[in-house]
Length: 95
Image 1: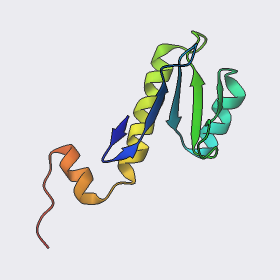
Image 2 (image 1 turned 135 degrees about the horizontal axis):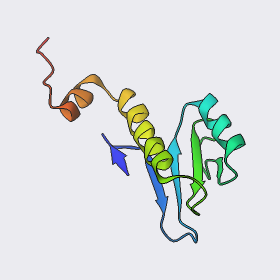
Image 3 (image 1 turned 60 degrees about the horizontal axis):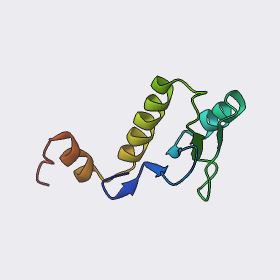
């Protein structure tokens, strides 16, 4: 899944059980890995910034949805201002 041409979530729909990788603040990523056995370092991704989550029912859905939202927000923060403005429906004033 992408926003502004950048990945914010990767769903491995061929995996059994299903997995999703999401971007995360580095300190929070480490904390989530320690707290949830189903959360590991991003598979084939920058392990400092990405977690891969096994969707096996051990993590509440609302938590997973929050992580997806947070991943989206992190990626949007890193986009150029004009792209962020276009996503929010705002126009960038002429310079």
